[in-house]
Amino acid sequence: LVKEYPESPENRNKLAGTLVNLALVCNALGDYAEAKRHLDEGQPHHRAALDANAKDPSYRDFYRKHLQARMRTCAGLDDRDGTVNAAAVYRDLGWEPARNAYDAARALASCIAIVERNSDGSDADRRERVDFYAREAMTLLRVAMMRGFRDAGQISKDTAFAPLRGRADFKKLVADLKVGSP
Figure 1: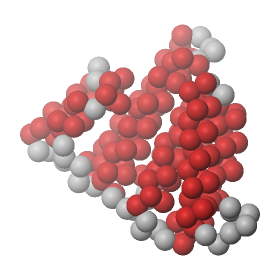
Figure 2 (figure 1 turned 120 degrees about the vertical axis):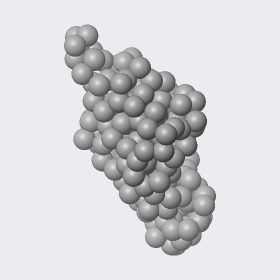
Figure 3 (figure 1 turned 90 degrees about the vertical axis):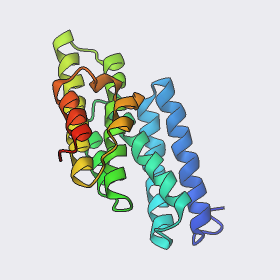
């Protein structure tokens, strides 16, 4: 349909969403290279749909899922720059600034399990990778707070942040939120 009707943002969005779903399956199977191929193929279709109507909720939703999948894919490929770049794009979407930063932090925290499973190096190398993603997720949580995110209960209960709960900086962030500190 996209070939036949290239000007249809709806068709482009559906194709992009299908490619995101294929990437998610590939990520679940550990085939990060194939997931990246699907995401790269879908990127221009997301852009075309959003360029046509940036306020369409389904276009936004599929693009958010694309960015989350891209972060996980890049983490699986040990592409830290790619992961951080996708997180920055998510953070700066501008649709819901506090929520965008919070969700980008969630996605980065979910990368921790991926690098724990896929680290081929030494234990020290694995710990360094885990710490990298934890630091990046904490940075985005602070950005979410600066942008107005204040729900300490949600952060405390959010399963995506389970790998961060033992960190002193995470505990301090939650405590600060509970007492109303920025």
